[in-house]
Length: 112
Image 1 (cartoon, rainbow, N blue to C red):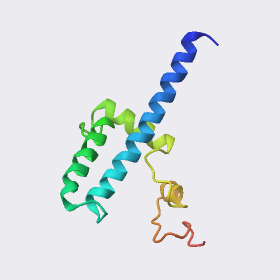
Image 2 (cartoon, rainbow, N blue to C red):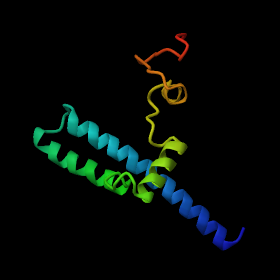
Image 3 (tube, helix red, strand yellow):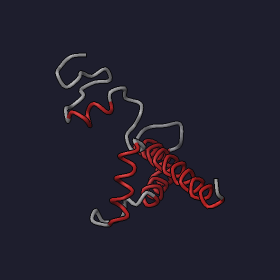
Image 4 (cartoon, rainbow, N blue to C red):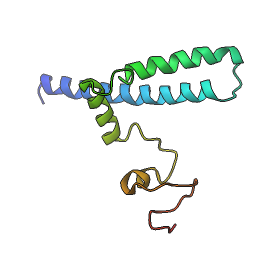
Protein backbone atom coordinates (compact mmCIF):
# COMPACT_ATOMS: atom_id res chain seq x y z
CA UNK A 1 0.00 0.00 0.00
CA UNK A 2 1.38 3.36 -0.95
CA UNK A 3 1.75 6.29 1.40
CA UNK A 4 -0.93 8.21 -0.54
CA UNK A 5 -3.52 5.45 -0.02
CA UNK A 6 -2.73 5.27 3.68
CA UNK A 7 -3.31 9.01 4.02
CA UNK A 8 -6.64 8.79 2.21
CA UNK A 9 -7.77 5.92 4.45
CA UNK A 10 -6.59 7.77 7.55
CA UNK A 11 -8.46 10.92 6.47
CA UNK A 12 -11.62 8.87 5.87
CA UNK A 13 -11.32 7.25 9.28
CA UNK A 14 -10.76 10.62 10.94
CA UNK A 15 -13.83 12.06 9.20
CA UNK A 16 -15.96 9.08 10.20
CA UNK A 17 -14.89 9.33 13.85
CA UNK A 18 -15.42 13.09 13.85
CA UNK A 19 -18.97 12.69 12.54
CA UNK A 20 -19.80 9.99 15.09
CA UNK A 21 -18.49 12.12 17.96
CA UNK A 22 -20.20 15.28 16.66
CA UNK A 23 -23.61 13.59 16.31
CA UNK A 24 -23.29 11.90 19.70
CA UNK A 25 -22.23 15.14 21.36
CA UNK A 26 -25.03 17.12 19.71
CA UNK A 27 -27.66 14.63 20.89
CA UNK A 28 -26.19 14.48 24.40
CA UNK A 29 -26.06 18.27 24.67
CA UNK A 30 -29.67 18.49 23.45
CA UNK A 31 -30.85 16.04 26.13
CA UNK A 32 -28.91 17.88 28.82
CA UNK A 33 -30.37 21.23 27.76
CA UNK A 34 -33.99 20.02 27.57
CA UNK A 35 -34.39 17.75 30.59
CA UNK A 36 -33.76 17.74 34.29
CA UNK A 37 -30.33 16.50 35.20
CA UNK A 38 -27.95 16.65 38.16
CA UNK A 39 -26.48 19.80 36.64
CA UNK A 40 -27.77 23.15 37.91
CA UNK A 41 -30.40 25.06 35.92
CA UNK A 42 -27.82 27.72 35.11
CA UNK A 43 -25.91 25.20 32.96
CA UNK A 44 -28.77 24.85 30.45
CA UNK A 45 -27.46 27.84 28.50
CA UNK A 46 -24.05 26.15 28.22
CA UNK A 47 -25.64 22.92 26.94
CA UNK A 48 -27.72 24.84 24.39
CA UNK A 49 -24.66 26.67 23.09
CA UNK A 50 -22.71 23.40 22.92
CA UNK A 51 -25.52 21.80 20.94
CA UNK A 52 -25.53 24.74 18.53
CA UNK A 53 -21.76 24.41 18.02
CA UNK A 54 -22.10 20.68 17.29
CA UNK A 55 -24.97 21.38 14.87
CA UNK A 56 -22.85 23.98 13.10
CA UNK A 57 -19.96 21.52 12.77
CA UNK A 58 -22.37 19.07 11.12
CA UNK A 59 -23.54 21.73 8.67
CA UNK A 60 -27.08 21.80 10.03
CA UNK A 61 -27.14 25.59 10.30
CA UNK A 62 -26.59 25.93 6.56
CA UNK A 63 -29.58 26.46 4.24
CA UNK A 64 -31.27 23.24 3.13
CA UNK A 65 -30.29 23.90 -0.48
CA UNK A 66 -26.57 24.10 0.38
CA UNK A 67 -24.65 21.21 -1.25
CA UNK A 68 -22.35 20.76 1.77
CA UNK A 69 -25.35 20.30 4.06
CA UNK A 70 -26.95 17.87 1.61
CA UNK A 71 -23.75 15.81 1.33
CA UNK A 72 -23.31 15.65 5.11
CA UNK A 73 -26.98 14.79 5.64
CA UNK A 74 -26.88 12.10 2.97
CA UNK A 75 -23.71 10.54 4.33
CA UNK A 76 -24.96 10.61 7.93
CA UNK A 77 -28.22 9.01 6.87
CA UNK A 78 -26.71 6.34 4.62
CA UNK A 79 -24.03 5.38 7.14
CA UNK A 80 -26.57 5.18 9.97
CA UNK A 81 -24.77 7.69 12.17
CA UNK A 82 -27.72 10.09 12.37
CA UNK A 83 -30.22 7.42 13.48
CA UNK A 84 -30.22 6.55 17.17
CA UNK A 85 -29.25 2.97 17.86
CA UNK A 86 -31.11 2.65 21.16
CA UNK A 87 -34.39 1.58 19.54
CA UNK A 88 -34.30 -2.03 18.31
CA UNK A 89 -36.61 -1.29 15.38
CA UNK A 90 -35.16 2.03 14.29
CA UNK A 91 -34.53 0.88 10.72
CA UNK A 92 -38.02 -0.59 10.25
CA UNK A 93 -39.60 2.85 10.52
CA UNK A 94 -37.31 4.15 7.80
CA UNK A 95 -37.75 1.14 5.52
CA UNK A 96 -41.52 0.73 5.78
CA UNK A 97 -42.52 4.30 6.53
CA UNK A 98 -44.78 3.14 9.35
CA UNK A 99 -44.97 4.52 12.87
CA UNK A 100 -43.47 2.53 15.74
CA UNK A 101 -45.66 3.25 18.78
CA UNK A 102 -43.56 1.87 21.64
CA UNK A 103 -40.18 0.49 22.64
CA UNK A 104 -41.20 -2.98 21.52
CA UNK A 105 -43.17 -1.63 18.62
CA UNK A 106 -44.78 -3.61 15.86
CA UNK A 107 -43.61 -4.41 12.39
CA UNK A 108 -45.35 -2.70 9.49
CA UNK A 109 -47.77 -5.59 9.10
CA UNK A 110 -48.91 -5.26 12.72
CA UNK A 111 -47.00 -8.30 14.00
CA UNK A 112 -44.25 -8.47 16.58
